Length: 571
Image (cartoon, rainbow, N blue to C red):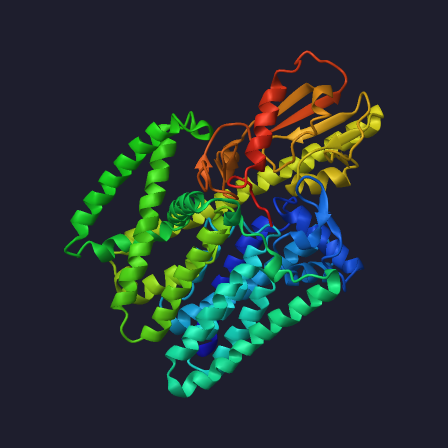
């Protein structure tokens, strides 16, 4: 095979992978955090020197942008291309190409040429990436983290500088990337005494953060980095410890759910002396956890009615997550010729997990996305020979098939879910014009984006002045504020529309138990034939045949969406 043919054998399949995950996201209706990100980008387009001085409606009402959690590099890029939904999706697609190329380089340098297409394909076609592209910061962040990893595994000063630049850019996309600073320093220190002068590369991300902070002072008079609220500060030490423990368990569960590649490891472990014992313990653990969850669910209101299948899936995901962690630790011990890089990668994974578990207000699949390339490369580096053997072929095929099937089917069902909000918003906008009645909407995420563009007015508790006959359209699943206590007695439920699921909606990211975007009492993804969404129409000062009973359930929904532990994407 010539050099050209060899290059083509890599570029063509990687390009097909890029087309596949881009196809699922391109043209997707606005979803989850899209509305806030696009509104911020619109403000930046008009006020580029004061990006955090504007207002965005993303909680109980319009609030200053600087109260939200994210820095603004990604939003500046969105402003540069429009901003529009399709333009933003093209930016995400460009980051996807960067991430795919960077992870390929990382894999080839650290793992080797074997699997250099398969490894990136499993990451970018898997259930953690395909559904969660949207216009979220985590997909671009993954690309920059992969570029950082590619620089770390390189054995050159140029690679180290690349890692430092990627670190600086990543810190301006999401503050989770602060964990890259100690990782960069550790990598330099482990290179030896002669290389410690390279610690100067730390000035690149540190200087970038300093410049960003000075810009914040000019913009709105504060330093955004140090102004981020720490969720655990609201609780006592005992409560914080309990919450952290619970998030740790959810982190492990979510890791197992998005790591079907672990199936490929079964042949590599069957020859281990302790294999049968570990397999037996795992089977017993799944049974015990399933039974325990069923018993606990009966006493935890949000979990009541959980099926045995749901509890069993929870147990399988948790045990799979433990297996991935054990494999990473074991693999790090086996690798002998790349100890510096392997040590850095394992510490990187541990610090990222600690950051999410301790500092994030909730656990979501997108939080686990960032550690997957680390786990995959460390495991593959130690077990690649066993993974590519003939005996392992059926298990490898099963792992690939399940990974891609979950990724694409979840991506499609999530796209269809997002589309429901666009369809209903357009219809209600037309109905409002035809009837002449003022129509409001309540709720954020993509619903907010489409409802506003359909001509509906936002209902803001304490600010919106309702008149008799006004209508309010309220979806059931999106994050939303509670009714204003002065308005609640005047509201009457007039109509409920439930969107029935089609077969492509059965495997889904989120139900009324939350899930993919906030894993709490739900699963990262699940099979369900429940309605895809429920839209309620409330009328002001006009009693209807449905009367007032559903209002109590509505207020229960308010508690569900407003709980900090259950709140889905809070930027």
